[in-house]
Image 1: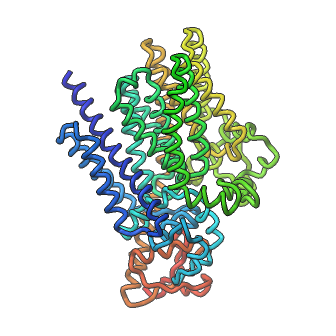
Image 2 (image 1 turned 90 degrees about the horizontal axis):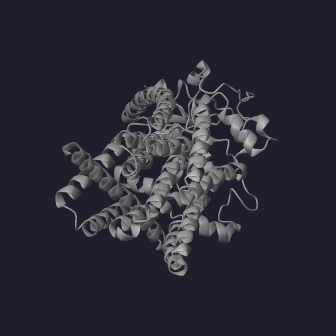
Image 3 (image 1 turned 30 degrees about the vertical axis):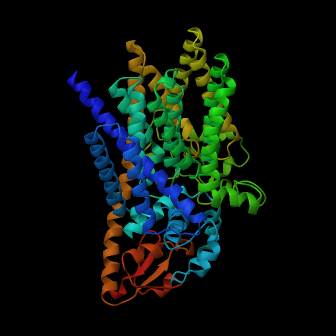
Length: 583
Protein backbone atom coordinates (compact mmCIF):
# COMPACT_ATOMS: atom_id res chain seq x y z
CA UNK A 1 0.00 0.00 0.00
CA UNK A 2 2.79 2.42 0.99
CA UNK A 3 4.70 1.50 -2.17
CA UNK A 4 1.65 2.24 -4.34
CA UNK A 5 1.13 5.57 -2.57
CA UNK A 6 4.78 6.51 -3.14
CA UNK A 7 4.57 5.62 -6.85
CA UNK A 8 1.37 7.66 -7.21
CA UNK A 9 2.99 10.68 -5.53
CA UNK A 10 6.09 10.45 -7.75
CA UNK A 11 3.95 10.14 -10.88
CA UNK A 12 1.82 13.09 -9.81
CA UNK A 13 4.88 15.32 -9.31
CA UNK A 14 6.44 14.13 -12.57
CA UNK A 15 3.23 14.91 -14.47
CA UNK A 16 2.89 18.35 -12.88
CA UNK A 17 6.54 19.20 -13.67
CA UNK A 18 5.96 18.11 -17.29
CA UNK A 19 2.86 20.30 -17.56
CA UNK A 20 4.79 23.28 -16.14
CA UNK A 21 7.51 22.83 -18.78
CA UNK A 22 4.92 22.37 -21.53
CA UNK A 23 3.05 25.51 -20.46
CA UNK A 24 6.30 27.51 -20.35
CA UNK A 25 7.23 26.43 -23.89
CA UNK A 26 3.72 27.16 -25.15
CA UNK A 27 3.57 30.59 -23.50
CA UNK A 28 7.05 31.47 -24.79
CA UNK A 29 6.22 30.57 -28.39
CA UNK A 30 2.79 32.25 -28.30
CA UNK A 31 4.02 35.41 -26.54
CA UNK A 32 6.96 35.82 -28.93
CA UNK A 33 4.63 35.37 -31.92
CA UNK A 34 2.28 38.07 -30.58
CA UNK A 35 5.25 40.40 -30.00
CA UNK A 36 6.41 39.73 -33.58
CA UNK A 37 3.00 40.93 -34.80
CA UNK A 38 3.50 44.06 -32.65
CA UNK A 39 6.86 44.73 -34.39
CA UNK A 40 8.85 43.63 -31.31
CA UNK A 41 11.78 41.26 -31.91
CA UNK A 42 13.22 38.68 -29.51
CA UNK A 43 15.10 39.91 -26.44
CA UNK A 44 15.74 38.79 -22.85
CA UNK A 45 12.37 40.30 -22.02
CA UNK A 46 10.55 37.47 -23.83
CA UNK A 47 12.05 34.80 -21.57
CA UNK A 48 11.35 36.83 -18.42
CA UNK A 49 7.75 37.54 -19.39
CA UNK A 50 7.18 33.86 -20.26
CA UNK A 51 8.50 32.91 -16.83
CA UNK A 52 6.18 35.39 -15.11
CA UNK A 53 3.13 34.14 -17.03
CA UNK A 54 4.07 30.52 -16.22
CA UNK A 55 4.30 31.36 -12.51
CA UNK A 56 0.89 33.04 -12.75
CA UNK A 57 -0.49 29.88 -14.37
CA UNK A 58 0.97 27.72 -11.58
CA UNK A 59 -0.48 29.96 -8.85
CA UNK A 60 -3.93 30.01 -10.48
CA UNK A 61 -4.25 26.49 -11.88
CA UNK A 62 -2.73 24.67 -8.90
CA UNK A 63 -4.23 26.87 -6.17
CA UNK A 64 -6.17 23.93 -4.71
CA UNK A 65 -3.12 21.62 -4.68
CA UNK A 66 -0.72 21.19 -1.78
CA UNK A 67 1.96 23.90 -1.87
CA UNK A 68 4.72 21.40 -1.09
CA UNK A 69 3.74 19.23 -4.07
CA UNK A 70 3.73 22.17 -6.52
CA UNK A 71 7.04 23.54 -5.18
CA UNK A 72 8.69 20.14 -5.69
CA UNK A 73 7.19 19.85 -9.20
CA UNK A 74 8.47 23.35 -10.05
CA UNK A 75 11.96 22.51 -8.73
CA UNK A 76 11.99 19.30 -10.81
CA UNK A 77 10.96 21.31 -13.90
CA UNK A 78 13.78 23.82 -13.29
CA UNK A 79 16.34 21.01 -12.79
CA UNK A 80 15.26 19.28 -16.04
CA UNK A 81 15.43 22.63 -17.88
CA UNK A 82 18.89 23.54 -16.55
CA UNK A 83 20.29 20.03 -17.12
CA UNK A 84 19.03 20.12 -20.72
CA UNK A 85 20.80 23.43 -21.32
CA UNK A 86 24.01 22.11 -19.75
CA UNK A 87 24.03 18.91 -21.82
CA UNK A 88 23.18 20.65 -25.09
CA UNK A 89 25.79 23.37 -24.56
CA UNK A 90 28.45 20.63 -24.45
CA UNK A 91 27.34 19.00 -27.71
CA UNK A 92 27.45 20.21 -31.31
CA UNK A 93 24.97 20.02 -34.14
CA UNK A 94 27.02 18.30 -36.86
CA UNK A 95 24.17 17.86 -39.33
CA UNK A 96 23.72 19.36 -42.78
CA UNK A 97 20.22 20.77 -42.18
CA UNK A 98 21.18 21.98 -38.72
CA UNK A 99 24.12 24.02 -40.01
CA UNK A 100 22.57 25.23 -43.26
CA UNK A 101 19.22 26.61 -42.11
CA UNK A 102 18.03 25.57 -38.62
CA UNK A 103 20.89 27.21 -36.73
CA UNK A 104 20.91 30.16 -39.13
CA UNK A 105 17.21 30.84 -38.45
CA UNK A 106 17.76 30.70 -34.68
CA UNK A 107 20.74 33.07 -34.83
CA UNK A 108 18.90 35.50 -37.10
CA UNK A 109 15.88 35.65 -34.74
CA UNK A 110 18.17 36.20 -31.76
CA UNK A 111 19.85 39.05 -33.65
CA UNK A 112 16.57 40.82 -34.34
CA UNK A 113 14.95 39.23 -37.39
CA UNK A 114 11.16 39.57 -37.25
CA UNK A 115 9.73 36.92 -39.62
CA UNK A 116 6.27 38.51 -39.47
CA UNK A 117 7.39 41.58 -41.42
CA UNK A 118 10.90 41.06 -42.83
CA UNK A 119 12.03 38.47 -45.35
CA UNK A 120 14.89 36.16 -44.41
CA UNK A 121 16.78 37.14 -47.56
CA UNK A 122 16.65 40.87 -46.81
CA UNK A 123 17.83 40.31 -43.22
CA UNK A 124 20.76 38.22 -44.49
CA UNK A 125 21.63 40.95 -46.95
CA UNK A 126 21.51 43.67 -44.29
CA UNK A 127 23.50 41.73 -41.66
CA UNK A 128 27.14 42.81 -41.65
CA UNK A 129 29.44 39.95 -40.67
CA UNK A 130 32.68 38.48 -41.99
CA UNK A 131 30.66 35.47 -43.12
CA UNK A 132 28.34 37.39 -45.44
CA UNK A 133 25.14 35.54 -44.55
CA UNK A 134 23.73 36.56 -47.92
CA UNK A 135 26.03 33.92 -49.45
CA UNK A 136 23.75 31.36 -47.79
CA UNK A 137 20.56 32.87 -49.20
CA UNK A 138 19.73 29.59 -50.98
CA UNK A 139 18.62 28.48 -47.54
CA UNK A 140 16.44 31.56 -47.05
CA UNK A 141 13.53 29.80 -48.76
CA UNK A 142 13.30 27.26 -45.90
CA UNK A 143 13.86 29.87 -43.20
CA UNK A 144 11.28 32.20 -44.71
CA UNK A 145 8.45 29.75 -45.35
CA UNK A 146 8.77 26.82 -42.90
CA UNK A 147 6.88 26.80 -39.55
CA UNK A 148 9.02 28.32 -36.81
CA UNK A 149 7.98 27.15 -33.31
CA UNK A 150 11.24 25.31 -32.55
CA UNK A 151 13.32 28.23 -33.86
CA UNK A 152 11.33 30.75 -31.81
CA UNK A 153 11.87 28.81 -28.59
CA UNK A 154 15.54 28.16 -29.41
CA UNK A 155 16.15 31.86 -30.16
CA UNK A 156 14.68 32.77 -26.76
CA UNK A 157 17.05 30.32 -25.06
CA UNK A 158 19.95 31.66 -27.13
CA UNK A 159 19.10 35.21 -26.03
CA UNK A 160 19.76 34.34 -22.36
CA UNK A 161 22.63 31.83 -22.72
CA UNK A 162 24.57 33.36 -25.62
CA UNK A 163 25.33 29.82 -26.73
CA UNK A 164 23.60 28.69 -29.89
CA UNK A 165 24.33 25.03 -29.15
CA UNK A 166 22.54 25.26 -25.78
CA UNK A 167 19.39 26.43 -27.57
CA UNK A 168 18.63 23.02 -29.14
CA UNK A 169 17.02 21.79 -25.92
CA UNK A 170 13.41 21.46 -27.08
CA UNK A 171 13.69 17.80 -28.13
CA UNK A 172 15.24 16.82 -24.78
CA UNK A 173 12.53 18.74 -22.92
CA UNK A 174 9.77 17.07 -24.91
CA UNK A 175 11.30 13.65 -24.32
CA UNK A 176 10.88 14.33 -20.59
CA UNK A 177 7.43 15.94 -21.03
CA UNK A 178 6.25 13.11 -23.28
CA UNK A 179 7.56 10.41 -20.97
CA UNK A 180 5.77 11.85 -17.90
CA UNK A 181 2.45 12.55 -19.65
CA UNK A 182 2.32 9.23 -21.51
CA UNK A 183 3.31 7.40 -18.30
CA UNK A 184 0.43 9.05 -16.46
CA UNK A 185 -1.97 7.97 -19.21
CA UNK A 186 -0.69 4.37 -19.42
CA UNK A 187 -0.55 3.82 -15.65
CA UNK A 188 -4.32 4.31 -15.50
CA UNK A 189 -4.75 1.53 -18.05
CA UNK A 190 -2.04 -1.05 -17.35
CA UNK A 191 0.57 -2.02 -14.75
CA UNK A 192 3.52 0.14 -13.70
CA UNK A 193 6.28 -1.83 -15.46
CA UNK A 194 4.58 -1.83 -18.87
CA UNK A 195 3.62 1.83 -18.39
CA UNK A 196 7.30 2.71 -17.89
CA UNK A 197 8.37 0.62 -20.89
CA UNK A 198 5.70 1.99 -23.24
CA UNK A 199 6.43 5.61 -22.24
CA UNK A 200 10.18 5.14 -22.58
CA UNK A 201 9.94 3.40 -25.96
CA UNK A 202 7.67 6.10 -27.36
CA UNK A 203 9.93 9.03 -26.50
CA UNK A 204 13.30 7.27 -26.89
CA UNK A 205 12.59 5.97 -30.37
CA UNK A 206 15.03 5.46 -33.28
CA UNK A 207 14.16 8.85 -34.81
CA UNK A 208 14.23 11.01 -31.67
CA UNK A 209 17.37 9.33 -30.34
CA UNK A 210 19.39 10.36 -33.41
CA UNK A 211 18.00 13.92 -33.19
CA UNK A 212 18.52 14.54 -29.47
CA UNK A 213 21.56 16.79 -29.83
CA UNK A 214 20.80 18.63 -33.07
CA UNK A 215 18.15 20.99 -34.46
CA UNK A 216 16.20 18.33 -36.39
CA UNK A 217 12.55 18.26 -35.33
CA UNK A 218 11.07 15.02 -36.73
CA UNK A 219 11.51 13.14 -33.45
CA UNK A 220 10.08 16.12 -31.58
CA UNK A 221 7.04 16.19 -33.86
CA UNK A 222 6.52 12.45 -33.33
CA UNK A 223 6.51 12.93 -29.54
CA UNK A 224 4.03 15.81 -29.92
CA UNK A 225 1.72 13.53 -31.92
CA UNK A 226 1.96 10.82 -29.25
CA UNK A 227 1.05 13.37 -26.54
CA UNK A 228 -1.85 14.63 -28.68
CA UNK A 229 -3.20 11.09 -29.12
CA UNK A 230 -2.96 10.38 -25.37
CA UNK A 231 -4.83 13.64 -24.65
CA UNK A 232 -7.52 12.79 -27.19
CA UNK A 233 -7.94 9.30 -25.70
CA UNK A 234 -8.15 10.77 -22.19
CA UNK A 235 -10.82 13.22 -23.36
CA UNK A 236 -12.71 10.27 -24.87
CA UNK A 237 -13.27 8.58 -21.51
CA UNK A 238 -16.99 8.27 -20.93
CA UNK A 239 -16.69 9.48 -17.32
CA UNK A 240 -14.65 12.56 -18.29
CA UNK A 241 -17.77 14.76 -18.04
CA UNK A 242 -17.78 14.28 -14.27
CA UNK A 243 -14.03 14.88 -13.91
CA UNK A 244 -13.85 18.59 -14.73
CA UNK A 245 -10.28 19.12 -13.47
CA UNK A 246 -9.03 16.15 -15.50
CA UNK A 247 -10.93 17.44 -18.53
CA UNK A 248 -9.45 20.94 -18.20
CA UNK A 249 -5.96 19.52 -17.78
CA UNK A 250 -6.23 17.39 -20.92
CA UNK A 251 -7.53 20.32 -22.97
CA UNK A 252 -4.54 22.41 -21.85
CA UNK A 253 -2.10 19.63 -22.79
CA UNK A 254 -3.88 19.07 -26.11
CA UNK A 255 -4.05 22.77 -27.01
CA UNK A 256 -0.35 23.46 -26.35
CA UNK A 257 0.78 20.24 -28.03
CA UNK A 258 -1.28 21.11 -31.12
CA UNK A 259 0.07 24.66 -31.15
CA UNK A 260 3.67 23.36 -31.11
CA UNK A 261 3.09 20.43 -33.48
CA UNK A 262 1.32 22.53 -36.12
CA UNK A 263 4.20 25.01 -36.08
CA UNK A 264 7.06 22.50 -36.26
CA UNK A 265 6.49 21.10 -39.74
CA UNK A 266 3.78 21.27 -42.38
CA UNK A 267 3.11 17.57 -41.80
CA UNK A 268 2.43 18.47 -38.15
CA UNK A 269 -0.65 20.39 -39.32
CA UNK A 270 -1.79 17.54 -41.58
CA UNK A 271 -1.29 14.72 -39.05
CA UNK A 272 -2.81 16.73 -36.18
CA UNK A 273 -5.89 17.53 -38.27
CA UNK A 274 -6.38 13.90 -39.32
CA UNK A 275 -6.05 12.40 -35.83
CA UNK A 276 -8.20 15.11 -34.21
CA UNK A 277 -10.87 14.55 -36.86
CA UNK A 278 -10.91 10.80 -36.06
CA UNK A 279 -11.73 11.51 -32.42
CA UNK A 280 -14.15 14.30 -33.36
CA UNK A 281 -16.14 11.74 -35.36
CA UNK A 282 -16.18 9.40 -32.32
CA UNK A 283 -17.38 12.18 -30.03
CA UNK A 284 -20.10 13.21 -32.49
CA UNK A 285 -21.22 9.58 -32.81
CA UNK A 286 -21.63 9.41 -29.03
CA UNK A 287 -23.39 12.77 -28.96
CA UNK A 288 -25.83 11.59 -31.64
CA UNK A 289 -26.66 8.48 -29.58
CA UNK A 290 -27.25 10.69 -26.51
CA UNK A 291 -29.34 13.26 -28.44
CA UNK A 292 -26.74 15.97 -27.73
CA UNK A 293 -25.31 16.33 -31.25
CA UNK A 294 -25.87 20.08 -31.73
CA UNK A 295 -24.76 21.01 -28.21
CA UNK A 296 -21.52 18.96 -28.42
CA UNK A 297 -20.80 20.00 -32.01
CA UNK A 298 -20.87 23.69 -31.06
CA UNK A 299 -18.77 23.00 -27.94
CA UNK A 300 -16.00 21.11 -29.78
CA UNK A 301 -16.15 23.41 -32.81
CA UNK A 302 -15.51 26.43 -30.58
CA UNK A 303 -12.55 24.82 -28.80
CA UNK A 304 -10.88 23.47 -31.93
CA UNK A 305 -11.66 26.70 -33.77
CA UNK A 306 -9.79 28.75 -31.15
CA UNK A 307 -6.84 26.31 -31.14
CA UNK A 308 -6.59 26.35 -34.95
CA UNK A 309 -6.90 30.14 -35.16
CA UNK A 310 -4.17 30.76 -32.58
CA UNK A 311 -1.91 28.03 -34.01
CA UNK A 312 -2.27 28.95 -37.69
CA UNK A 313 -3.08 32.66 -37.73
CA UNK A 314 -1.07 33.92 -34.74
CA UNK A 315 1.89 31.60 -34.16
CA UNK A 316 1.81 30.46 -37.79
CA UNK A 317 1.37 33.95 -39.25
CA UNK A 318 4.91 34.13 -40.69
CA UNK A 319 4.48 30.77 -42.42
CA UNK A 320 0.88 29.68 -43.08
CA UNK A 321 -0.71 33.13 -43.48
CA UNK A 322 2.14 34.79 -45.38
CA UNK A 323 2.61 31.73 -47.59
CA UNK A 324 -1.08 31.85 -48.52
CA UNK A 325 -1.07 35.55 -49.41
CA UNK A 326 2.37 35.69 -51.04
CA UNK A 327 2.62 32.26 -52.68
CA UNK A 328 -0.99 31.11 -52.98
CA UNK A 329 -0.54 28.03 -50.77
CA UNK A 330 -0.12 27.78 -46.97
CA UNK A 331 2.23 24.79 -47.42
CA UNK A 332 4.62 26.50 -49.84
CA UNK A 333 7.41 25.62 -50.80
CA UNK A 334 6.44 21.95 -50.49
CA UNK A 335 3.15 22.50 -52.35
CA UNK A 336 1.77 25.02 -54.80
CA UNK A 337 3.20 26.82 -57.81
CA UNK A 338 6.99 26.55 -58.19
CA UNK A 339 7.16 24.07 -55.31
CA UNK A 340 10.50 22.62 -54.22
CA UNK A 341 11.18 18.89 -54.59
CA UNK A 342 13.02 17.75 -51.45
CA UNK A 343 12.43 14.02 -51.94
CA UNK A 344 13.75 12.97 -55.37
CA UNK A 345 17.41 13.74 -54.72
CA UNK A 346 17.22 12.19 -51.26
CA UNK A 347 15.85 8.81 -52.34
CA UNK A 348 17.72 5.88 -53.92
CA UNK A 349 17.86 5.94 -57.73
CA UNK A 350 15.73 2.77 -57.99
CA UNK A 351 12.83 4.51 -56.14
CA UNK A 352 12.27 6.99 -58.96
CA UNK A 353 9.48 5.09 -60.78
CA UNK A 354 8.11 3.00 -57.88
CA UNK A 355 4.88 3.58 -55.96
CA UNK A 356 4.68 4.65 -52.30
CA UNK A 357 3.77 1.24 -50.86
CA UNK A 358 6.61 -0.45 -52.78
CA UNK A 359 9.12 2.14 -51.51
CA UNK A 360 7.76 1.91 -47.96
CA UNK A 361 8.14 -1.86 -47.63
CA UNK A 362 11.45 -1.94 -49.55
CA UNK A 363 12.88 0.60 -47.13
CA UNK A 364 11.53 -1.20 -44.07
CA UNK A 365 12.74 -4.69 -45.09
CA UNK A 366 16.22 -3.62 -46.23
CA UNK A 367 19.53 -3.33 -44.42
CA UNK A 368 19.81 -0.08 -42.53
CA UNK A 369 21.73 2.44 -44.66
CA UNK A 370 21.76 6.06 -45.74
CA UNK A 371 21.36 5.46 -49.48
CA UNK A 372 20.90 8.68 -51.45
CA UNK A 373 21.03 8.97 -55.26
CA UNK A 374 23.05 12.20 -55.25
CA UNK A 375 25.73 10.71 -52.96
CA UNK A 376 26.07 7.06 -53.96
CA UNK A 377 25.13 4.45 -56.58
CA UNK A 378 24.22 1.97 -53.84
CA UNK A 379 20.72 0.58 -53.69
CA UNK A 380 18.67 -0.78 -50.75
CA UNK A 381 19.56 -4.39 -50.00
CA UNK A 382 16.75 -6.63 -48.72
CA UNK A 383 17.36 -8.79 -45.63
CA UNK A 384 15.57 -11.35 -43.45
CA UNK A 385 13.71 -9.74 -40.49
CA UNK A 386 15.41 -9.95 -37.06
CA UNK A 387 18.88 -10.31 -38.60
CA UNK A 388 21.73 -7.86 -38.07
CA UNK A 389 24.55 -7.29 -40.56
CA UNK A 390 27.94 -5.90 -39.65
CA UNK A 391 27.67 -2.99 -42.09
CA UNK A 392 24.45 -1.88 -40.36
CA UNK A 393 26.48 -1.23 -37.22
CA UNK A 394 29.33 0.54 -39.00
CA UNK A 395 27.30 2.61 -41.49
CA UNK A 396 26.92 6.31 -40.72
CA UNK A 397 23.99 6.70 -38.34
CA UNK A 398 22.52 10.16 -38.80
CA UNK A 399 19.37 12.04 -37.84
CA UNK A 400 17.80 11.35 -41.22
CA UNK A 401 18.54 7.66 -41.82
CA UNK A 402 16.85 6.93 -45.12
CA UNK A 403 16.64 3.14 -45.40
CA UNK A 404 15.24 1.14 -42.48
CA UNK A 405 15.24 4.31 -40.40
CA UNK A 406 13.22 2.75 -37.57
CA UNK A 407 16.07 0.36 -36.77
CA UNK A 408 17.67 -2.95 -37.70
CA UNK A 409 14.94 -5.12 -36.15
CA UNK A 410 11.90 -3.00 -36.94
CA UNK A 411 10.83 -4.99 -40.02
CA UNK A 412 10.31 -8.10 -37.88
CA UNK A 413 8.72 -6.06 -35.07
CA UNK A 414 6.32 -4.48 -37.58
CA UNK A 415 5.21 -7.88 -38.93
CA UNK A 416 4.58 -9.17 -35.38
CA UNK A 417 2.64 -6.04 -34.47
CA UNK A 418 0.43 -6.33 -37.57
CA UNK A 419 -0.42 -9.91 -36.56
CA UNK A 420 -1.20 -8.76 -33.00
CA UNK A 421 -3.36 -5.86 -34.13
CA UNK A 422 -5.21 -8.13 -36.56
CA UNK A 423 -5.96 -10.54 -33.72
CA UNK A 424 -7.08 -7.71 -31.41
CA UNK A 425 -9.41 -6.39 -34.11
CA UNK A 426 -10.98 -9.83 -34.42
CA UNK A 427 -11.33 -10.06 -30.62
CA UNK A 428 -12.96 -6.62 -30.35
CA UNK A 429 -15.35 -7.42 -33.19
CA UNK A 430 -16.24 -10.76 -31.63
CA UNK A 431 -16.91 -9.11 -28.25
CA UNK A 432 -19.05 -6.43 -29.94
CA UNK A 433 -16.83 -3.57 -28.66
CA UNK A 434 -17.81 -1.33 -31.56
CA UNK A 435 -16.12 1.91 -30.51
CA UNK A 436 -12.72 0.37 -29.79
CA UNK A 437 -12.92 -1.76 -32.92
CA UNK A 438 -13.84 1.27 -35.04
CA UNK A 439 -11.06 3.49 -33.64
CA UNK A 440 -8.34 0.84 -33.99
CA UNK A 441 -9.44 -0.04 -37.52
CA UNK A 442 -9.66 3.67 -38.42
CA UNK A 443 -6.11 4.24 -37.15
CA UNK A 444 -4.69 1.33 -39.15
CA UNK A 445 -6.52 2.28 -42.36
CA UNK A 446 -5.65 5.98 -41.96
CA UNK A 447 -1.98 5.12 -41.41
CA UNK A 448 -1.76 3.11 -44.62
CA UNK A 449 -3.66 5.77 -46.58
CA UNK A 450 -1.11 8.32 -45.32
CA UNK A 451 1.71 6.00 -46.43
CA UNK A 452 0.16 5.87 -49.92
CA UNK A 453 -0.44 9.61 -50.33
CA UNK A 454 2.60 10.99 -48.45
CA UNK A 455 5.58 11.68 -50.64
CA UNK A 456 8.60 10.29 -48.81
CA UNK A 457 6.69 7.85 -46.59
CA UNK A 458 9.58 5.39 -47.06
CA UNK A 459 11.66 7.75 -44.92
CA UNK A 460 11.12 6.89 -41.24
CA UNK A 461 11.33 10.44 -39.93
CA UNK A 462 8.29 11.42 -42.03
CA UNK A 463 5.95 8.70 -40.69
CA UNK A 464 6.03 8.79 -36.86
CA UNK A 465 2.60 7.14 -36.65
CA UNK A 466 4.06 3.86 -38.01
CA UNK A 467 6.05 3.46 -34.79
CA UNK A 468 2.73 3.32 -32.93
CA UNK A 469 1.87 -0.09 -34.43
CA UNK A 470 4.11 -2.15 -32.09
CA UNK A 471 3.50 0.24 -29.18
CA UNK A 472 -0.27 -0.19 -29.53
CA UNK A 473 0.22 -3.96 -29.64
CA UNK A 474 2.20 -3.84 -26.38
CA UNK A 475 -0.35 -1.51 -24.77
CA UNK A 476 -3.43 -3.58 -25.70
CA UNK A 477 -1.79 -6.91 -24.79
CA UNK A 478 -0.50 -5.60 -21.44
CA UNK A 479 -4.06 -4.75 -20.36
CA UNK A 480 -5.17 -8.39 -20.71
CA UNK A 481 -5.10 -10.73 -17.71
CA UNK A 482 -4.06 -13.93 -19.47
CA UNK A 483 -0.35 -14.77 -19.31
CA UNK A 484 0.03 -15.30 -23.06
CA UNK A 485 -0.78 -11.63 -23.66
CA UNK A 486 1.83 -10.58 -21.09
CA UNK A 487 4.36 -12.75 -22.95
CA UNK A 488 3.48 -11.04 -26.26
CA UNK A 489 3.95 -7.63 -24.61
CA UNK A 490 7.26 -8.73 -23.09
CA UNK A 491 8.63 -10.11 -26.37
CA UNK A 492 7.71 -6.96 -28.30
CA UNK A 493 9.16 -4.72 -25.58
CA UNK A 494 12.41 -6.71 -25.57
CA UNK A 495 12.69 -6.48 -29.37
CA UNK A 496 11.96 -2.74 -29.33
CA UNK A 497 14.52 -2.14 -26.55
CA UNK A 498 17.22 -4.06 -28.44
CA UNK A 499 16.31 -2.20 -31.63
CA UNK A 500 16.56 1.29 -30.12
CA UNK A 501 19.54 0.21 -28.01
CA UNK A 502 21.56 -0.65 -31.13
CA UNK A 503 20.53 2.67 -32.72
CA UNK A 504 21.50 4.60 -29.55
CA UNK A 505 24.86 2.88 -29.19
CA UNK A 506 25.94 3.41 -32.80
CA UNK A 507 24.70 7.02 -32.73
CA UNK A 508 26.12 8.19 -29.42
CA UNK A 509 29.50 6.45 -29.65
CA UNK A 510 30.19 8.12 -33.00
CA UNK A 511 28.79 11.50 -32.02
CA UNK A 512 30.44 11.74 -28.61
CA UNK A 513 33.84 10.88 -30.10
CA UNK A 514 33.35 13.70 -32.58
CA UNK A 515 32.18 16.10 -29.86
CA UNK A 516 35.43 15.44 -27.98
CA UNK A 517 37.50 16.17 -31.09
CA UNK A 518 35.57 19.39 -31.81
CA UNK A 519 35.98 20.63 -28.23
CA UNK A 520 39.75 20.16 -28.59
CA UNK A 521 39.75 22.04 -31.89
CA UNK A 522 37.62 24.87 -30.48
CA UNK A 523 40.07 25.24 -27.59
CA UNK A 524 42.91 25.46 -30.11
CA UNK A 525 41.06 28.07 -32.16
CA UNK A 526 40.25 30.07 -29.01
CA UNK A 527 43.90 29.90 -27.97
CA UNK A 528 45.01 31.29 -31.35
CA UNK A 529 42.43 34.06 -31.10
CA UNK A 530 43.63 35.06 -27.62
CA UNK A 531 47.11 35.66 -29.01
CA UNK A 532 45.57 38.68 -30.75
CA UNK A 533 45.56 36.80 -34.02
CA UNK A 534 42.62 36.37 -36.32
CA UNK A 535 41.97 32.70 -36.98
CA UNK A 536 41.80 32.03 -40.69
CA UNK A 537 38.60 30.09 -41.49
CA UNK A 538 37.44 28.42 -44.70
CA UNK A 539 33.91 27.01 -44.87
CA UNK A 540 33.31 23.54 -46.30
CA UNK A 541 30.50 25.23 -48.25
CA UNK A 542 29.06 28.76 -48.18
CA UNK A 543 25.81 27.23 -46.96
CA UNK A 544 27.43 26.64 -43.54
CA UNK A 545 27.43 30.34 -42.63
CA UNK A 546 25.81 29.57 -39.27
CA UNK A 547 29.33 28.76 -38.00
CA UNK A 548 29.48 32.52 -37.45
CA UNK A 549 27.36 32.12 -34.32
CA UNK A 550 29.57 29.38 -32.84
CA UNK A 551 32.68 31.54 -33.30
CA UNK A 552 30.95 34.62 -31.94
CA UNK A 553 29.66 32.73 -28.90
CA UNK A 554 33.22 31.66 -28.09
CA UNK A 555 34.51 35.24 -28.62
CA UNK A 556 36.84 34.06 -31.38
CA UNK A 557 38.38 36.67 -33.66
CA UNK A 558 38.46 35.28 -37.20
CA UNK A 559 39.01 36.05 -40.85
CA UNK A 560 37.17 34.18 -43.58
CA UNK A 561 39.13 33.08 -46.64
CA UNK A 562 37.36 31.98 -49.80
CA UNK A 563 39.37 28.85 -50.46
CA UNK A 564 41.00 26.23 -48.25
CA UNK A 565 44.14 26.47 -50.42
CA UNK A 566 44.73 29.89 -48.83
CA UNK A 567 45.41 28.13 -45.49
CA UNK A 568 49.03 27.12 -44.82
CA UNK A 569 48.22 24.23 -42.46
CA UNK A 570 44.48 23.46 -42.75
CA UNK A 571 42.63 21.32 -40.20
CA UNK A 572 39.12 20.08 -41.03
CA UNK A 573 36.47 20.28 -38.28
CA UNK A 574 33.30 18.68 -39.67
CA UNK A 575 31.97 21.70 -41.58
CA UNK A 576 34.91 24.13 -41.77
CA UNK A 577 38.70 24.38 -41.97
CA UNK A 578 41.00 26.49 -39.82
CA UNK A 579 44.69 27.33 -40.18
CA UNK A 580 46.95 25.67 -37.60
CA UNK A 581 49.98 27.65 -38.81
CA UNK A 582 49.34 30.34 -36.17
CA UNK A 583 49.34 27.95 -33.17
